[in-house]
Length: 214
Ligand code: ATP
Image 1 (cartoon, rainbow, N blue to C red):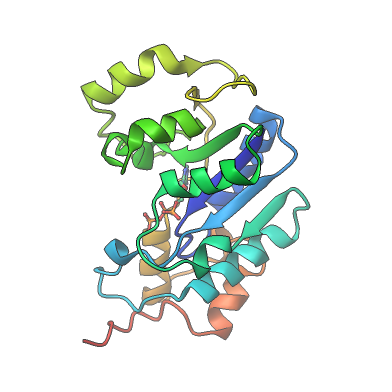
Image 2: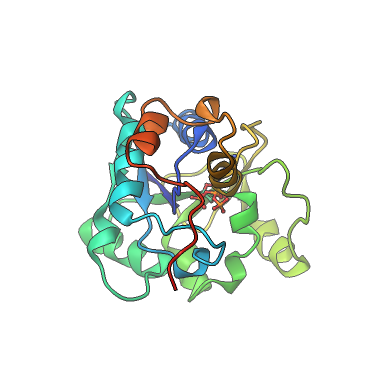
């Protein structure tokens, strides 16, 4: 079984690393791959400078560098056009048809899963490990509750797909959005960033709060 942790990682933070480490323990997988998403157009509207894929990947590489079982995967970044999770999972299946997969996700992102492109196929291609996101209080829709009810498992069975493991792990309450704001405001945030990431941000002058050029 392989564990995939997709995200924008703009920037990667201690919540991401804590989730990946908890996943290693809960899933008993050898490694967790951080899959850096291609440029997320829907996330460029907060008036901040766009962080290039190269910078986001470099930060993830730094976050993973001290952990032999955390891997930075930039393979999605060379792709053009829309990038859908279902297509990523199909590519992974083509690479190894016998391997089973687990998609690591926070509850805020999982709440939207029934709106994903070809979401039924997504469930056929992966399991989910869902971490409660502190501060995410709106909960799941009735449709999602109904869909996952028969699929919730205590422990992911590595021979199947379509299972949903709901973790009660307490992860740090931190988000990339909050970090971008804090960095732009010059507030201390070194403690919220994995080792080496803060230095990288400062060196490259990222998240300075400069607006995106029209
Ligand atoms: P943003 O604030 O820009 O939405 P983010 O902090 O959610 O960013 P992403 O890169 O979008 O970071 O997150 C990747 C995945 O990690 C998502 O599934 C998200 O729900 C999950 N995640 C991020 N931070 C946490 C956290 N502190 N606890 C649990 N899950 C988290």
